[in-house]
Length: 366
Image (cartoon, rainbow, N blue to C red; front, side):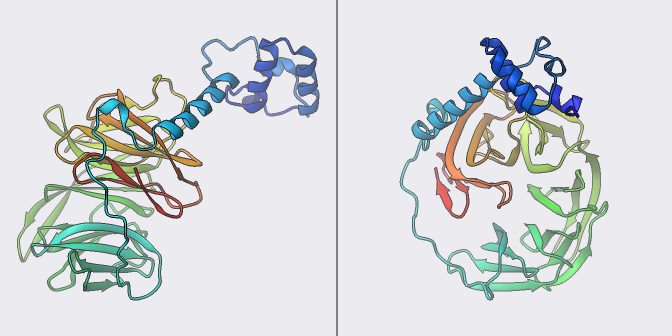
């Protein structure tokens, strides 16, 4: 029984790639042996119909060579001084936070609460803990805001905690009273919420593994009241992974990266109409060898967007100027990465001279 016709004719099919190589170099006997042992007719491979196909065995080997070269030569260097290098060594010694029980940490961020910076830590035991940024003292512990663990959190007005959970809900809690004031925003996600981002205390965007992105406007925020209204909702063809608010062409945009696509997309706020689509591939083809997983903006102005990719087994980090498709940095940083492990995350150094990237099982400084 011969192989599936669609899979065989796929340009990325390994058997077809090898067969193309053998035919191009005149290894006809070996090609026939490959066909016999694979139980595939040579005619089914359509080896004469390869016009426009960019994927070749030689090309894959060259990409591998370039990646290994990049690991050796560019581990701590961003592209051609477009982004400045280290200005000073970073702090090396970790400071453990006094988490009450041994449990997996799912999310960490720094937010301002009552005019004081706090470290927010969400854990697998469905708790949200707030630590003083300077003393690391546990200031507040909130439990069971959701029926499942919290994956993202932001603070609005120094008082209202927005949390997004694996239950698909976005819950708003008053940190002064520790009371839930909004038990779920409109247009609840049908699967867990993986991203929640805030822009200047006015706009909130969420994405979920139901492939939806919701945009909310905070229309009122006082010491006694907060009101949030849904402004737009869109559905993507694949799973959204990264969200970022930024200014683009004198307008506010929501930048999105998603699974199974090589595009970085800019959506206008508040309509969520697609404004700009950027192909992240260096040669601008449509071959999806990686996807964007985590995006952030360089501190100090809207210059560069940093992006962690799904590349395995070693991590890759890219940088683009806001709204432009020219790749300004392409760093194969060597940090181990797995589709079965934690998703890649990164954060810029405060001066924008480099970034920290999360890997398995440690943190890499690059």
